[in-house]
Image (cartoon, rainbow, N blue to C red):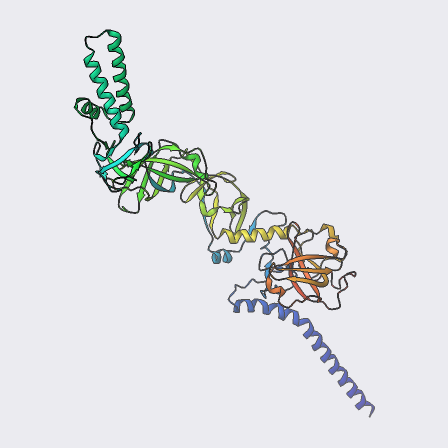
Length: 540
């Protein structure tokens, strides 16, 4: 009986040890199985297996300076992106390392900086205008009436000396009669004393000068002097061959001295007024040749010369007018037409150049990405010079022969900005899933890191995507409890928020004094704006 009891107890002990060993073995095996499943899942999803490389942290998919030691989603529901060991570059380095497969996916292409002459063409839009020096106004200098019109249409072509209109003027008849009497007096005083004859001659000369001052031609004056009687009308003729651009004269109308009745323009030479942008005006000089194309004649190019660069700039368009003289013997070019102007600008010599697509211009800085090795790139600030149609001069920052990224450089620049934000942290990104120490100095953390707080919503402004929150102290910034306004990274964050609701939120400093909420959720307990948040380090 005792022996049977001992056998039963032994059997139960062995079974218990086996069960405990199996449980312990299963517990030890779970992490290994879980870790091995990750690469297989990645391969199944179409991503290359990363072997045994360790995940350092997870970065924000929108490029915000917000990293997490564990997988999570952003407020828009996007998964945080894992950063593997070897991808983040070495601490303190200005380079960014990208794997070969990612380079192929991005379509990165490089080209060497080279010495070239930057012959370029400055293009501008111009308009055709008449030559101001070849415009004439016909305005009688005496009062009278339009007796007859010889040219009665605007736009009519006229030859030089062609009659335009006839006028009748009592003043003109009186002046003619006075001149005729003075001439007769001079002839009658042929045998008189010299003093009397000189006096009458002065009177005749004054009458003749009066007629000349009224723009009566010498030919007409000779006709008046030879006529026995004064003429009732006087004919005005075109002073130049051209086009009647304005006609105010109407048969029978009365006109006053100085009133313009006709305008005639000589269009054998016209002006092209081109608006050159401010950044190009420094290379445009008077005397340079210009090539002009007009939409009315697409298969024909006209050649002109810059005769004047205007001294003023148009503030509305930030451009400077340039005048180009253009011959128009066939009268094909009409005032008012638009033209495309091309000005060839000679280069100053060979300079270090790169394709324009290699330059990343943010407005305040210009930079390029230099390939320093296989999968390694370095951002460099550059100073730009002259530009051509597809290339730009690099005055500083790059040497001849260095390989520059010419495609997908904006995507690599995003990686570079992310790395700069990560390297700027006072504490390195966690690599073992552990959160930063509780006693870390808040002042040592940069403003670009995320901060957590709890509070109560006071007001919501959906139009400006801002929310006013009365929050408790923020340990990471040494802030006391206060009320302030925050912006939200995405307006969808405001969807479920209501005034008076207690929330726990995470925020970052996007700019100087600009605080942006990146995530928000209901508080686990009622908000106490004077108490320390329940989870001061959540999300770091």
